[in-house]
Amino acid sequence: MLKSIKKSFKYLMILVGIILLVPTFASLILRIPEVQTFMVKRIMGHFSEKIQSSMTLGRIEYTFFNKLLINDLLIKDQNNDTLIYSKKIAAGINRLDFTAKTIKLGHIELFEPTIAIITDSSGIMNLKWYLDLLGSSEDTVKKSDNKFMINQITINDGRFALLNRSGPEAKKMIDFNNLRLSGINGNIENVRILNDSTMFTVKELGFSESGGFLVRSMNSKVAFADNDIIFRDLFLYLDSSIINADYVVLEGDSDDSFKRFTDDVRLDIALQKSLISIADLRFFLPALTGYNESAELSGRITGTIAELKGRNIRASYRAYGYLDCDFDLSGLPEFKDTFIHIGFNSLRANAKDLEKIKRNGKDSLAIPDVLNKLGDISFNGSFTGFLTDFVTYGKLSTEAGNIITDISLRPEGKSSFRIKGMIKGNDVDLVLLTGKSEILGSLTMETEVDGFA
Image 1 (spheres, rainbow, N blue to C red):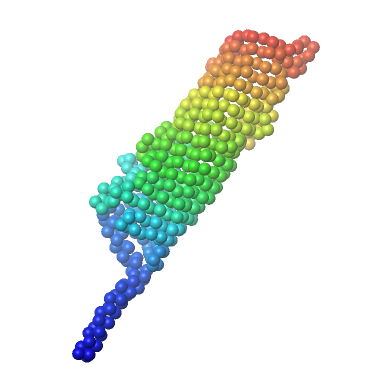
Image 2: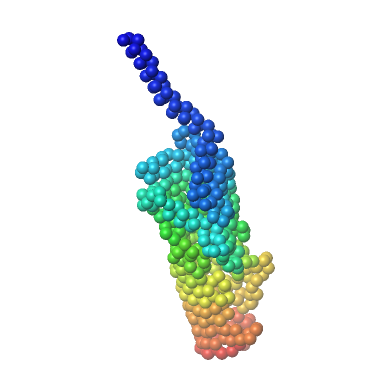
């Protein structure tokens, strides 16, 4: 009897040993990077066949239970172009709960990542093609049940491309149909993907655009919802500008809106006092190329680039220049074709500032001597029309007296302008303007003007 018990106990111990050793051995086997890589490659091969595209990687290593290392990850789109690539990915895994449909990752570090969002000649965007394909899968879970979170993403020397091979060639230095960013470095924190919304915080993110536009540092709370992009508490340190904004909203009607950024994307910008340089603006408004002026600017800007509105706009320029106005612009980015309406609450200027304006290092404005004699100039009124064909109404105050204008100016021929309207003068100091005290004094007048200049 005892012998039978011992024999039974022996078999029981062997069985327990097998039960313990098999998972342990399997665990040890799964720790081998080559085994992990082989398994993942088989899985990626299955998905490649399923989505009719190429997914490959060089090597993968999973350290139980919370760290994943991936080398040479490559995902191609339906046209065999690169969609996503990263030389190395190191990811910390905090929680994988497929029952609760929750994935929470810790710190992810990306080395030389590349993302290329391409719209092909048929008008199909590669990323949307993937999302539609995955969305139609039978095992796709409901979006409303998904929760995806990442504590921090560190990007090292990344690249991003937004290409539209069916789009027209842009005349601006930044072409949103051929946008290429490189040297992307920085951190993205508190990533939350819930339903159709994505939220995260950008810290110390920098990059350069292929045309030369440079972002030295960017900090902001960012949200993507439907076709809207929202930046809150935005700080941008550009090559020559420093921008502070309570919020910047880019709102599109559809997925295709950003392909026609100038006409279809509506802006809403609440700008705090910022330093804006023409050297940076020229990338969006080519007519400003060659100038290197800067001004302090604040106010709210709304509408599309093509139909832009500004309210409570305040700007300071050099020692004397100051502007407080509202504006409506229609026709940008082509300045010569832009219809302008500006309501000046206050405009102050001095020829000493104007004569310092240069283009390509050379004087760009021929300042008449009479402007220097006027000293500090202030204007309250309005400007309506085009740069070469406009109506101006308001009060002009100078050290030589005050003038009320209601005149129009329009080109006549190739080298002359027709001036027509009403001018009223009050105590205009002709001696100061002409220097001829022996024959002139002060002048008060009201006259209609109709002539050429």
